[in-house]
Image (cartoon, rainbow, N blue to C red; front, side, top):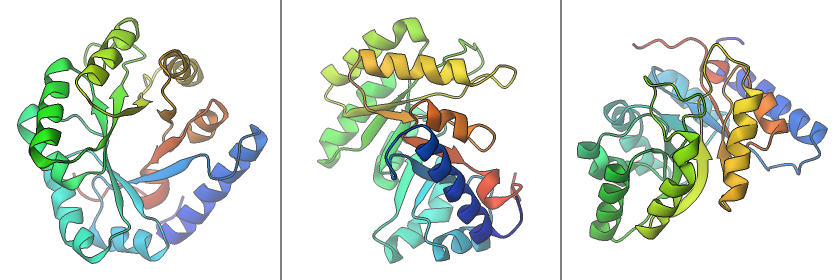
Length: 223
């Protein structure tokens, strides 16, 4: 990893391609989400200049600062919300993001469905699964996943994928495999799993989206 965003992107895309080929999957099966949390404008512009168009953000206000003006200039951006979504921020999230990856409770599902109806639009949704059953972390626990996915679908939400963040202290592969099992059981095709340290493992286990921050941009410069 260097401070050269274009070089980092090239290296990561090469690694994605190699992992995809090794696992017998088709080129282009996995989308790189460049996580721009805590990054300064110059690094975002470097990524855009290098051709990156899919970005992930954790916080609504920071995302607005990063992307509102840039969206007005570029019609080909795809923005994913990958951090917790408070119900009082749903309207802002729906206005800015193309994909909501952190759908994790019935109240949020209801608020999103109402916001979609009110705005006359939809955003793709991923259900966040707390595969490690960590009480301090957001996400539906695995044994409640099927029921919650059904609830979201009944509310009219377009559930296109599942997302997880494995515990830092555990090997990620079993968590990725568990997420894939839940997705297959529920007829869900998208799998958002894998970050800078483990995205290659995630790809071998079926990731359709990997979320890479420091691997693309280097260390965060804004807290």
